[in-house]
Length: 249
Image 1 (spheres, helix red, strand yellow):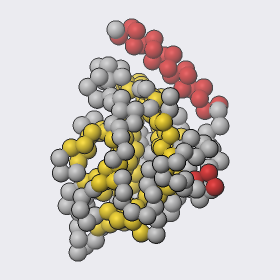
Image 2 (cartoon, helix red, strand yellow):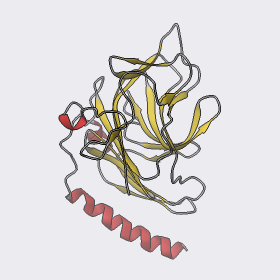
Image 3 (spheres, one colour):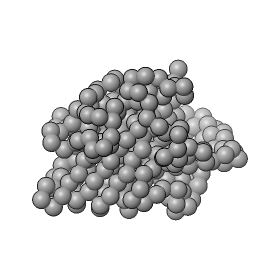
């Protein structure tokens, strides 16, 4: 098994090493026509379907009193007068996608951390367990893939191959600090995530942040819910809009 994994790692590292030869940045930006909201439930020409209607919380469910819609934007906010003492999530009730692309435009402010859960399972008290496309204002976790119990599965600038036993082969695909420059502080950014079999890739504003091929049986998830995180801690605000999903065949 060890020799087979070594060969697979070597081949995989070669493929990843050649990947930067392809264009790293796409043209779509957070406020471009490509990110204009589609009618909820209606498939656009690019195959994406809006899963947030921009009007209310129909199709979503979260901790009472925390999430609201303001001017077409999903908002969760904590203040000194109303602190968030325990992280919780807003669940999308539309199913448990397996292979898909998800795009969401977000903005985060304050001493904040948040994330977009996918291929996750619902837990009691508005909690979740599964993969998370991480984001924060400090830039420490933005563009990283996180998972409960495993912590950071891939950091920004990494391609990670994980075998069944949880052993990692890590290849650099970019400089973490340089990749962070693609993220607009205190402004709108587009998060894109693609999950296709064991392959998971994250982009922000068209720039690839990390890639994972996950075969660890204990943690790798083939499908699950989508959810948005409101994180405990200091006062913060997180906003999401133009959330769109495209199922892969």
